[in-house]
Length: 217
Ligand SMILES: Nc1ncnc2c1ncn2[C@@H]1O[C@H](COP(=O)(O)OP(=O)(O)OP(=O)(O)O)[C@@H](O)[C@H]1O
Ligand SMILES: [Mg+2]
Image (cartoon, rainbow, N blue to C red):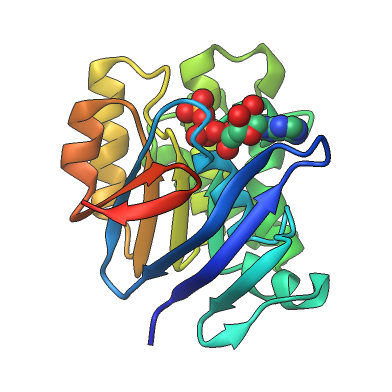
């Protein structure tokens, strides 16, 4: 059984921009898919479709063997699938980094002290414990990237959808993030990147988006 199965997905933005044209993709256990494609190819759009943040005009989305159509269906899968947004400012909205990172665990029903403990451990793992009391929007671009990653990993998702995870990170920090992700017990991921070293280190399969469809490379 595929963890995520997209079949014949078509999607246009309200302005009529047809971005996905009958796209199909399967994410299987252990897959670390590097999703490649030019700027504007529709990579980010595709990740948002998988989580139901955008609704396709046509096609089927099946996650963990269940068809996802309604908001209710997508709500059930969002806890298990962590999406790192391309723009960190879309991910961070609390008054402090710690609150942002504890937000997911709290939302999943954890008690406050447990959620705080989980958040602090995650920040420590990513090497940004010292940022815990900072205001997210005052962080540097790279610090925001790591804080965003922490908000996702603190929920211990089974699948990761990573939209340019090492963007804005210096070489050393990028390597540290890759190493954290490689040691993270995840069932599969889809990762978008334009950085060759990230693609090579983080992928065991490659998919190329072109003309609103996907070719396995
Ligand atoms: N809200 C929107 N309304 C209309 N068009 C949009 C909207 N968001 C994105 N697009 C367009 O849809 C196309 C796909 O955008 P998307 O962000 O998915 O591309 P991408 O492959 O992630 O690109 P990049 O590598 O630059 O991040 C682009 O042509 C973009 O201009
Ligand atoms: Mg994008």
